[in-house]
Length: 203
Image 1: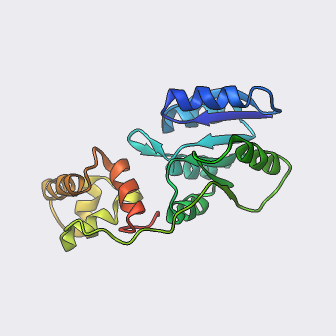
Image 2 (image 1 turned 60 degrees about the vertical axis):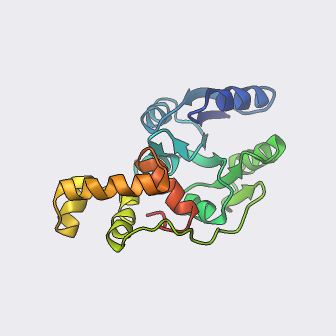
């Protein structure tokens, strides 16, 4: 059965490929970003895709939603370092068939893939999960929280400015403050940190 691996770490991709070498699952392509992922999904039409959540400046959950919106028949298994139940629920809402933490045994991942390939429709997960953490006080202003909740929608700074009746430079100033307070280098990382800390919910 053809599968693809979409993860921004080469070592993870090569390790998974090696681990699956003697199984019925054949890795036909790899990708490290959302754009590359969509390209290999369209080209190879795999039965299953193993997708990380953190894909550089983008989210693997966005890739799943985009692919499914294009009527893809691929089944998605989220394979991630995140181990919070809230992230699992976000993956489920995005349309994933399973959620596996990178701390889980490879045998658990393979078993889940076998179940999916066998037609199982029940959402599955493997790996130890932690209860969602209490909200950490990042000292956000009400306006910053308002803008933060809009980030998972993918709206641009210009679009957010229009929604909130503010200027684009004002929004960019708030975004800079948000990234600084979250110690995030970009929007995808900010959204990931905000999700883990229960500041927002996945759209």
